[in-house]
Image (cartoon, rainbow, N blue to C red):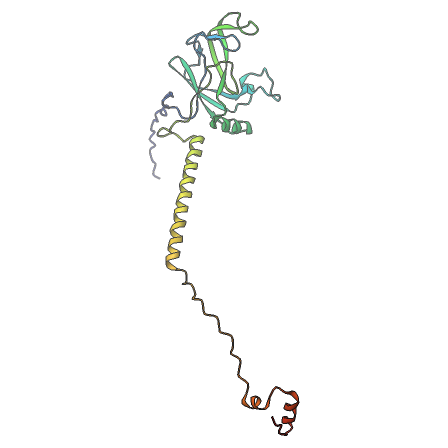
Length: 262
């Protein structure tokens, strides 16, 4: 009985995805913060560099209006609510950005995705845990604070956010090599393909019509025949011309063999 030696090959760690940036990110890109020191609708400000994520983490749950719906407990924690996808986030030039990735597991997710890709949803909001802050007494209820340090917990797409700068800053971008086309790019390509197909079909139909006309030319128009002349009346026979004088009585006697004089 032969035995075969087993050789083990150590596999390296999978290649890490290149970091996102405004130049390379595909899909709609949203900014997440106001400039440092700018008050939001609640009177809150956030210092430069205050927002943080755990090392190695670049995704957080994505919600629609923070999932504050009648069927959801309003004060539920992010992990207790149903997300519509994930937000891939990164920091660049002192601003935080994210790209939404929809899971399409619910009708809410697919509806929000369609509205976002169509450009109807242009604002966002963030949920964070304040670690260090100073009350500033600003805002409608005077409960605003200057946030010095905070942990990002979630991102939400909204109709209108509290931070004026938390808006869509980039529409669809060209797909980078090795990346899967986004839904918006797929629809765009499908529309272009359909338009090209319709043009090709129309051109082919014109060529087929021309070929058919050449192969089966229409018959020449028929010449109009002259109308037949009306029949000519036959002249009266000689006997009748001889015997009929126009006098009914004389004609009767002649028919009996009698000679009728003039």
